[in-house]
Amino acid sequence: MVALLWLVVGVLVLFSVGYLGYSRYLAQFVGLDEGAETPAHKYEDGQEYVPAKKPVLLGHHYSSIAGGAPIVGPITAGLLWGWLPAVLWIAIGNPLMGAVHDFVSLSASLRHEGRSIGYVIGEYIGEEGKNLLLWFAFLTIILVVAVFAFVIGLVFEQYPSAATASILYIGLAVVFGVYLYQLDLPFIPGTAVFVVLVFASVFVGLRYPIQLSQQAWIPIILLYSLIASVLPVWTLLQPRDYLSSFLLYAGVGGALVAVIVGTLFATSSAPLVTNIPAFTAFGGNSTLGAFSPLFPMLFVTIACGTISGFHSLVSSGTTAKQLNKETDARLIGYGGMLGEGLLATISLCAVAVVGITASDATGGVGLALPKFAQGGGIFLSSLGIPVSFGAPFMALVMVSFLLTSTDTALRLGRYLFEEIIGTPETQAQEIGANRYANSLFQCIVAYVLIASGTWTPLWQLFGSANQLLAALALLTATVWLANWDESKQLFSTGVPMAVMSVITICALLYLEYYQNLYQGLILGNTSSATWSLALQIIIGTVLIALSLSLLRKGIGNVRRSRSSGRPATDGGTE
Image: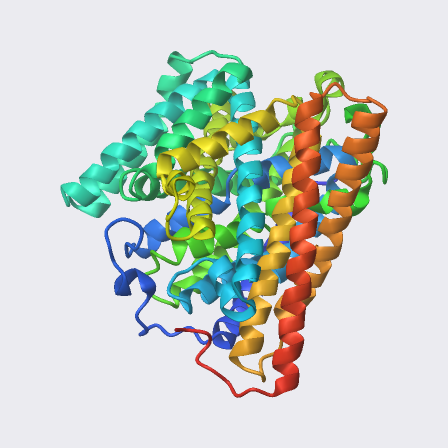
């Protein structure tokens, strides 16, 4: 057993070096200018382009990217392969790959009027390349919605008090939006009052829990996400994400402090140490499910705790449209991803301190996911907070970010599909451009995927698609840099792009053609619905084809731009 303190300290040291050194270099590398007019000011419309105060935007961005994935992924990976490979990938990969990805995606969008990464790559390799990336991102978004709705339903079933608290928290966010943007009342006093009310909702949830099954919660969650995704950003998105950021700060910060206190001052009967193996086996922990090879599945299972393509959609879809100053991109882009890595570390520590129980062996990894709340409650008890309150509070922390990511994903999916279809000229295009029909379509496909009833394969399909999207976002940044200035080095984006491309394509090939097609459909070694497995295979195949085609086009563009010796441009702005 190893003290959890050493895991936390090791990650903090590497993250600090990354932010103080590497992020400063990257900010100079892309030429952030504090005095430059950002798209939020240039195109302010009160709907999508809305300049946001730095703490408000950090709250939105952090809440949107730090959803359920950095909680669920490390917990799943830690149970399957042990804590050591999981913490190494988080501590090393996050500052060198994930934070770089988020920062350059946000910077590229800033230089292209706050447009999406699909638009950016289309500027350099044409309309076909743009559509390839947009379709890839759109399919990934549907997977995001599916897996997060699945997990929220599971947590609500396990912690019904968190369901009540979440409903109250959403209602408070709507009222706070009216308070800020319609009544124009004082910001700081309002923040103080509404943050206290959000925390108080936990007590209400403990007294009045809403008990429903996971299957009952899933359609409710999808309906909520549909409604939230079509509202103006000031109505729910900005105020909710700002308020939820305090939950995240309290949950992650409190857990970090609690790990230190619980390690240094713990009684001999309850030390905070790892209660899962450092390493299980290359094929994973057999008591929790079928064989799952460490390479490439560890990397796509941890997913957003290290690197996430979904973040490029948030950075270029909503954050770039709300950035007040260019220089804010360093903290929000690079620093925000490091914050997500800390959440991933705390999640891994939570499952490590709880360990594996008999119910986990019978229910698989899916049943183990609420361990974040259970382990977090144990951490907070080191600070004198009762586990009976700490565990539901950590469940609310987890669910609040899952809800944030789910409806933000639907909103981004709507943006992407609108970009794909272009100006509506036919009845089909008009239906696709309709925000309600667009979001409803995504929800229906997500529900079909959830119907498989199996957790790990669906999560790993999402992780593979998500991290392959990250590789394509890094490809977009590399193409932008290559066309901007021939003197720019491309290693910072090119090397992570190559690494993630190899890992994720291998993972998709394994999942779709060995696990789902051969083991699932041909041998029938699964209880999953046949049509759901078939849909997963189709989506996986399309994703592989789209990514290979886009990688070929993008790399070809980089080679041509470097061989032509073209002069430096203004960075791709129009």
